[in-house]
Length: 124
Image (cartoon, rainbow, N blue to C red; front, side, top):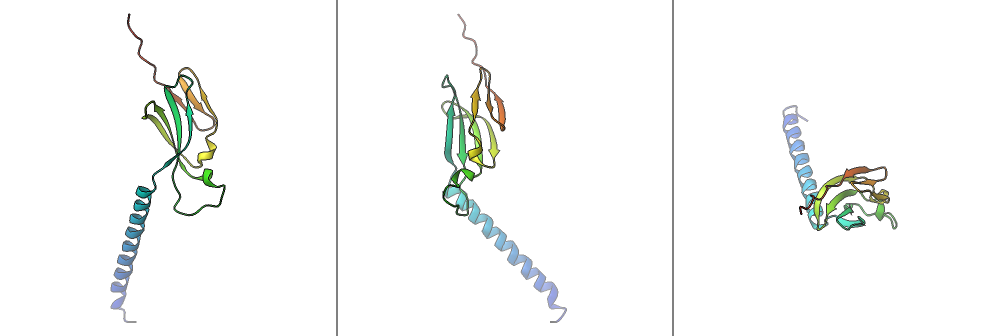
């Protein structure tokens, strides 16, 4: 191989890799748009004003039966009906299984503690 061709070969390989990464990124984006996160579990507050909702993000790779809870996702604290107050990513959605509601906060065991907004006092 002639030394004059080496710079051109490097440019062609770099361009090919760039196109491959662009196509792979586009494929992932299309996958995410066609397969949105799905609700995995919901915990409602005793007074019905708030809810902790766990969403699973579909995997690009197939999983074995029984591993659906191993999916990554995110957890949201929502005020009914659906207003997002807090959100945090989680690596395994099945790890969110204990939610404790208190007067002014919600505790998700080994994951998060979020303050709950207080209702304004009603006047006379």
